[in-house]
Image (cartoon, rainbow over all chains, first blue to last red; front, side, top):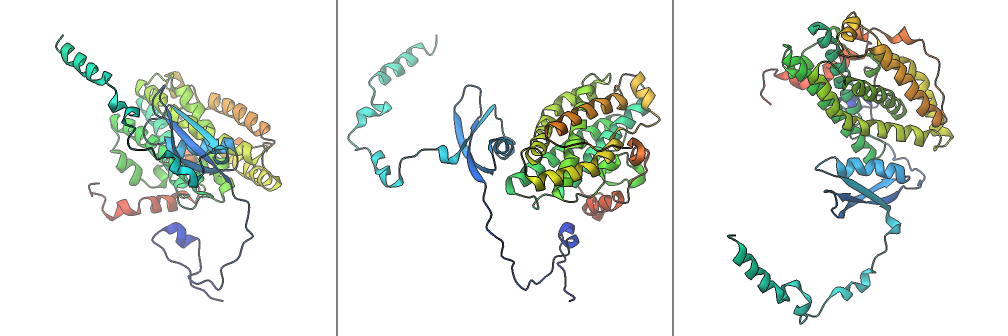
Length: 129
Length: 251
């Protein structure tokens, strides 16, 4: 059979001599998939570790290896954690209405603290000293 | 300080970095899994950065602009070791080459931190943190696919080691400037580097349940003195194809 191969602007693809047409797509056995790990990045010394995403990896060592490049190669990092995704415990989705607070509880919000006025006054009084 | 000797060392290091960067970048988009594709590509990009930094040092010493040096020479003007020229092969070949190359880079830059040529000593300090990740990446995979792997992964890494290890000695081929480089304190020399490299590689390979083949050091010599494999010129043709369309273009 004389089949045409893919000519691409990417020389690597042309070199691979891939047929332009395939008769059938081979069915592969479904293999085990890697588990995922959640990645937490610390941007400043002493700062919080913040969740930045996840990586697929066969084990913790490789997960750290990937996390460093996936999430640490841009911007500054001073620390990084990983944790298996299945170790994360969360509030079930159907129960998230628990977070809905009634609107009349202003006293629970920082803005309602009476001390704030005194702090503002203190700042104003001491500004030019 | 012997300026020609210094330039010879810089050219060898820069060309190694440029060519390995290009080779490893050939995996971009075709890597075994997404995360590894990104990591390996990122390492390749770092290597390109090292090449640029070294060509810039050469430029300060009176050589042409880095783009001109990188993109307008033919194979006979290159100083790279034959190790970096070979096609990427299968992923096991590329991984093992990366491991052997970066282990040597790491030790070379550690030693160069004492260089009598201050700009080089400074650069060596600067790139050492990047190379630390490169060797961490390489060593993690060798261990993972060696003692932590299965029969197939172990057999493939062992077979790649058998092929690549002898070629890796091409990195330590000396040039006629070797004595001057050592005498002027520019670099402690290829012999010291090779000794430390063999020691380090042996310890990692052994700890990974693998073995090193015997190697006749000099079989793959030539690159440092412009005798290259048949693979270098086609690589250069491909790498420079866009540059050659309009060499005077402003980027």
